[in-house]
Length: 378
Image: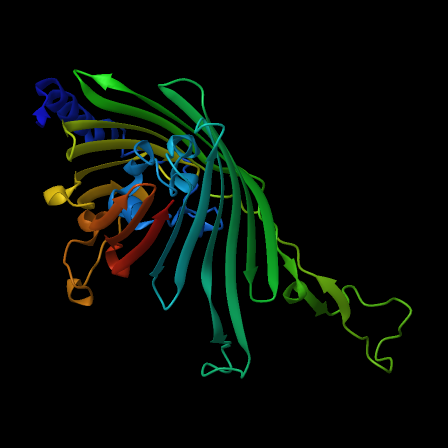
């Protein structure tokens, strides 16, 4: 029999009430030194699955499947069986992002090892210049990739932690860069009034800068000042000198987040979880997210289950004022950006499970994206 906790309702209401209040308390009239738009490799923030996308940034607290390798390494220690997951979606401007992961519990399930790979980019785009706006005949491609190795461990029946070593590769036309980063996450899980409660702390993409190099930075430049040994009007004229453009290193998008999740309804085949998350990144002001997931298992005594999910994520730097609402499908881009929802169907019997999940996320003036995930466990 499912039970609704009065204390849980009060706790949830407090969490959601604090989210906007904490941000509104900031003085918005005074300028600050927030370094908006100063980081590279933003594809590291694109997510790792339809379930996490539908639940927004708040998902890290209940991430205990293969996608925990991305969202919270500490949650990966709670995997009950080996598994694999693959996700993909079409991003804006004909680009595509894909993510895949493998996780293997060992030592009786107290530890987990996992690997993950994420890719983003496009290919064969025409090169245009001011003199040749229709194209020069040349093309360029962008390929961004990260690969991660995760180790997670249960330190008690209530606490787990994990660490991911991440390698980032960025190919932008004829220049490239690479960086190293780490993710660290924890998961505390207990009960409050006989209902599960979870708390998480996650630090993502803490690492070295991306410094670009490549053939595109090799240039020729007139010699300045001229060679003093060449007389004025001398012949032949001075030849351009080889040179190399210098680039500045760009930091990775480092994010710290703390999340809390509580099961309002908990039963053998029926669960309703509410989530809240507060986050701070190195290229934005503080943000928050809130969401919920309703899951039903063993429908009609069968091995099938379904889930419905929804969330809203607020990121201050994404507030874009649209002067002509007719340019977009919706008139309130600022308020609706960050809205996400979705669902999934899963099948589980014995040591085998199979799941298909879908999510829709609205990106404001950039439109919406459709995220699909296929997961299997054995």
